Structure formats: C-alpha cells, structure tokens
Image (cartoon, rainbow, N blue to C red; front, side, top):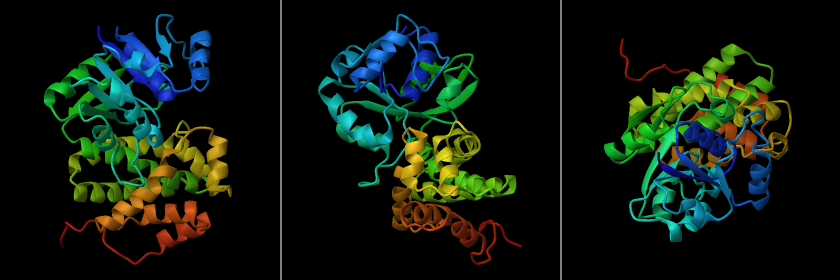
Amino acid sequence: MAKIGIIGAGTWGIALSVLLHDNGHKISVWSALPQEIKDLQEKHEHKNLPGVVLPGDMEFTADLGHAMDQKDLLVLAVPSIFTRSTAHAMNPFCKEGQIVVNVAKGIEESTLMTLSEIIEEELPMADVAVLSGPSHAEEVGRRIPTTCVTGAKSKKTAEYIQTIFMSPVFRVYTSPDILGIELGGALKNVIALAAGIADGLGYGDNTKAALITRGINEIAKLGVRMGGAFETFCGLSGIGDLIVTCASMHSRNRRAGILIGQGKTMQEAMDEVHMVVEGVYSAKAARRLAEKYDVPMPIVDQVNEVLFEGKPAAEAVQELMLRDKTKEANTLTW
C-alpha cells in the first residue's frame, strides 16, 4: 500500500483517487476550495461525476502541507492554467526526490513550457513524471477499461508509477518520451475544438476523420521537430487521445467546439460547458510553437482565427479545403 496525495479535486483527480483507492492505496485529496472539500466530505460524490461514490475512508483536506506530508507519490491534477501557481505553493512541503505525477494537459502560453517543465522549475527537488492517454474521468470513475502511458526520466520511476496505477480496468504502459506525451496531450485539445466546430456546423463523419488524420499529422510534425519521438504520436497520448477527444461528448473541448460551430462566441461556449476548456488556453501556444519551429499547422491557425479573431467557422473550414494542392506524405516517392 502506498500513501498518495491527489493535488486537485476536479473530475480527473477524483476519478484517479477512486482508481488508486481500489488498488489498495491510502488516499488524501486536496482542493484549494474549502467548499469543494466540504461537499466531498459530506456527500462522498463529485457534482460532475454523478453515480461515482467516494469511499468513506478517503481523506479530503484544504491543507496542502497535510496532503503532501509523508506521501510516496503525489498526483498533480489541477487544470493546466493553475499548474504553476499550485506547484509554487507546493514547494515548501516538497521533499527531495518526491515523485510528482502530472496528469493535466496543456502548454503555458506566456513561456511555451510544457507542464512538466513548469513543475520542474517550481519544484527542482522533485522527480517529475506524467500520465496521459485517452482517459475521460467520467469513464475511469465508473471503472470502464482504460489504457494510458506514463513518462518519466528513469525507467525505475516509470515502472513504479505503472505498478501503482495498474488494475484490471486501468492498463498503463511506460515511455521515456515525456515531451512527446505532453505535446500529444496538449495539442489534441486544439484539434478537438476544430472537430467540435465541424459537428456544430452540421458536417459529418468524413469531416471528422479528415480533421483527426490531418490533425495528428500537424501534431506529430511539430512534436518531432521539438524533440519528441514519432512513435509517441502513433500511440496512446497521440492518436489515441486525439480520437477520444474528437469523438466523445465527455470531451469539454469538443462540446465547446460544437457550441462555437453553432454560432456562440468562445466565451459563451466556455461558460456553457462549466469546466476548463484546455484547448482554448493551448491554441495560442500551439500557434506560437508552430511559428517558432517553422512547422505549418493550418488547422491550428484556423482554430485561432475562429477563437480570437472573429472568423466565421464555416469560412475557416472552406479555407482548409481550398488550400494549395499538395501530396499526403513527403517521404514517399514515385
């Protein structure tokens, strides 16, 4: 049995706390919101995970130091926009060599840093790892079979995390490619917004398939240019996560995209979804990374223009369809 602190009581943090409790571990869940902790203590249910009953011996606390004290593993599960501030607050309580597993997905817009890079900057004493893949909290909380990948700097750490999380309903693979895993997880949210926009416009399966296929092409080209492994983008945190986020109504990015395609503004869509839409925060960063590394990303460009420049969604799709003729793969020859 391991002692585990879940830092963040959103749907993903709570779903993972249920999974880890099922695995026999002792769980403490922290939130910065005292009312959220009070509700969890009294109702043993998260408002956005109806039907997922939280065990009576699971601890909930608003005391960050207590949540981190003497823990074998910390799971950092706050939305990406709060990763830096939360990691900074964790610094006084973090011990040398503490394993911190980041499970959020995003890129910091102001610095273009991945979330693990942010955590390493704020917690230089920690052993920072990631866990990612096609894994909606709504399904993990209901114990529906799910598969993810964990990335760490050392094989020992990755295999330890794999052992902690593995269960009959949650299979975990290991990888040394932390960068590729994080880029796949962050950038797919931008493509999922595009897929949702297409749904909102009333387009069909052909359009969705095109966006997924060309989307992973954009993600992989940028990811490899930045130093990620091509194989990673063919795997769970690449095409796997992209498929589930573009296709599922559990996806807040797709849902927000649908609303935008139906004519709502970006802010109206975010307000209606009622949860953090990570793709909105990653879109500008993705575009800046594409410019920095000189990688064409036409889908990302059009999503940015729709979100932030007032371009009509239908016009963005038309521009994607009417771009200059080209070949599908530059590595193939006649």
